[in-house]
Image 1 (tube, helix red, strand yellow):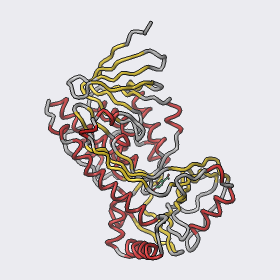
Image 2 (cartoon, rainbow, N blue to C red; image 1 turned 120 degrees about the horizontal axis):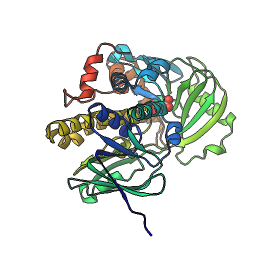
Image 3 (cartoon, rainbow, N blue to C red; image 1 turned 90 degrees about the vertical axis):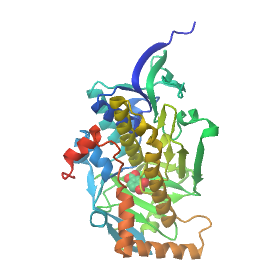
Image 4 (cartoon, rainbow, N blue to C red; image 1 turned 60 degrees about the vertical axis):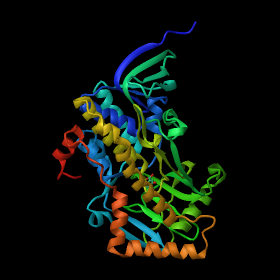
Length: 417
Ligand code: DHB
């Protein structure tokens, strides 16, 4: 006998408890709008998955002003600059003086822990460990999410609108028919070999290195744990490398002037693919995509999480207007507004990737061209400003000045961490 489906109703059904879904649910709750988050992973899995760690100034401002920034301010660290190494020399780009903004190093899973804690403290409804999630009736006025709950019972959630925040592998976007959807896609001929190592930091700021052997990035997680990456073949098997080979590769890529690279015990490794993707449009009927569900960027510059947060901010403003006044104008314009910032970040991530990586067809001419570009970007005030503006993040659109997030940002403006 098939079990009876349980029925529930909410204003906004959110598929996915990643940065976009959780931030959206958090902002909606501050505005008095109900939501339910449906997630297939466990809470433990979400809180333990290691991703990038750079928060743009706008992301920090949103977190701090909406009450989820305390741990970020206590344990994250503000970075006012980055180091670019090329031709064996180290060049610092001062973000604060070049763009008037900074970034914070604070890992993505910590952001998720903060958002989950805030939602649960406010009696928020997050359904972890669900399965068989599917969307129905997204072009009608009452779309429905079908899913199987953590206890194996079939359930339906009826909503006014659905936010598809189910990440790059998610299925929400497939509810936009092929005839209405354009998939803008690019694959890169390299991946990133990423490691976590128990070691002291090598530098107070991140090091992005261009070398004759390819790109490397030296980042950090805590004073005792460092995160490092180097460009590799996308099909590389991380387990086939010895620790010595990994250190030799990293050392050779960051060699030259500047602080030496500290080695330590490698306790996690893996290869990250590099792709760019934008789903066009980002909405269909009453389905609105946000975060990686709508777009993917290559990791260079760490824009993924930041775009998820800015999408959530733009969508929350539109939903607040819709539920507060009945006007759907901002909702109708959501995809267009969000996509403008998404494409700027796409360009930035592609640009940093192309400037710093060697592709199989990168010849001598291209390498000299890259070095000239890096020389110009680090050696002129205009170049540094361009890099710093993109790196610290373009402004997030304020389409609804009366929204809680706009109010909160106004109240905390001038108290920039
Ligand atoms: C990290 C990742 C990035 O892609 C980046 O550009 C900077 C930092 C990180 O994991 O720390």
